Amino acid sequence: MEQEMFCYQCQETAGCKGCTKVGVCGKQADTALDQDKLILATKRLSLAIVENGNKEEDVKVVSTLVIDNLFKTITNANFDNAVIETAIAETETLTSKLSGGKTLAPEAVPGVLSTSDENIRSIRELITYGLKGLAAYLKHAAVLGYSDNKINTFMLTALAKLLDDNLSLDDYVALTMETGTFGVQAMALLDKANTETYGNPEITSVNIGVRKNPAILVSGHDLKDLEMLLEQTQGTGVDVYTHGEMLPAHYYPAFKKYENFAGNYGNAWWLQKKEFASFNGPVLLTTNCLVPPSDEYKDRLFTTNDVDFPGCAHIAADENGKKDFSQIIELAKKCQAPSEIETGSITGGFAHNQVFALADKVVDAVKTGAIKRFIVMAGCDGRANSRNYYKDFAQALPKDTVILTAGCAKYKYNKLNLGDIGGIPRVLDAGQCNDSYSLALIALKLKEVFELDDINKLPIVYNIAWYEQKAVIVLLALLSLGVKNIHLGPTLPAFLSPAIADFLVKTFGIGGITTVEDDLKLFALNY
Image (cartoon, rainbow, N blue to C red; front, side, top):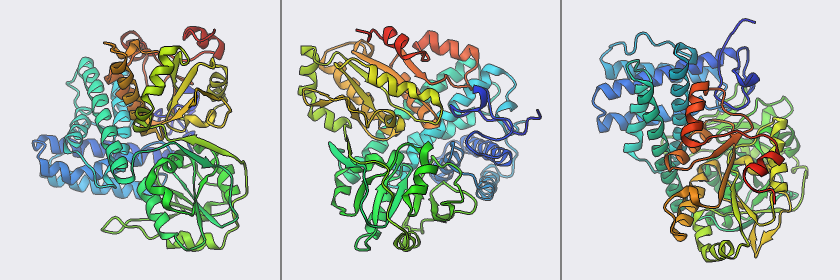
């Protein structure tokens, strides 16, 4: 079979080896090539900045563009060749200006396979995917007015180093760990942006049923878009629901004042074709993950930020960052109310500030043995049947364990009746994937409270599901904090060469998953 493309950046890549004809995500070969060209152009732009001495003003000028470029290439974000090609042209023009017309990295060609050495290729891609996740978090912070030039400078420097054939494998290993360190800083920046803007998340019960009003469904991760939409829908008779990774918006105090903020509709991203169809009203995609839409609802799917799909209306911001959602609101008024697909409620809002407020209660439960183990089950959900493992694992856990979660992986178990321990729910949802930062802070706080000298001495098991590049930066961030023995599933990344995978296993105890029964034994949870 002729290879028309090559991409292995997500967990569902074909055969756990790589997509070569069309992406499992729906990305076509020509789009994959354009994204490869955009990544190379972005690396060259970064190299131009580095060769100019990483001047602060230069970094500020290009950072927004670089962040957007990386975000456009994240899985299930941008499918529009014209948009990607415009970004390539803009990037190349700016590079030429900054380099004085000099051709940078002339031997570099687009695409993963341009690096011939398997291990160098593997670790370069690991860093690249980590930087894509880093960029996503920087973008969310930036729209709220928060940025950090030191993180931006590192991002550009790291991208430039990915073009340097003089660097050794050891050099790239060091860069990988440094990427994780800056990943922690980026997540801290976003946490600050979110909490200073919208307040600290608090324990909240979220309705998963529907009302009788016409409505708009918001998916993705961007809280600023949700805020603008809620403001513009006041008094219109149109409700607003969250979907997927937008669920944690309900936990922020600032959003609770909106009476038309109705609840959460549906589940994780991969079910959107069914759920967007039954919702009946317009859908706004603020970030990934977008599944190529069916004709049943394509005309009521809107995109914004770095998400684009040919044939779907795109809402752009004006020069002041404001967006006019009137087109979506007027369409909503003409649509039927959402069809009910489930009823009840789910509880979340257990970010670090809320858990710290419960610290005495949690510590007492650990000391008395009421809580014997915490299980970190953060990360991503996906369509593979093998992911039912996480539902089964959650159900099989002993009743004296508590699940710490963030990201859309929670949809495998956040609607199960797993009960509580002395009033502490057995599923503590910190929020979106970026809120894995909260889970790290909780672990560090417990280490302090119990006066331990090593975070790995805590009664915590890490059994994490991954899908795309934001999960990669979370993994690198945890490694940079010294966390070991993380189990990653449902498969190990295809972009890890055998040698790099072996290095991660031997150095950090990285492992995969097997069966629920065997893993419960492995984690000493089979009592």
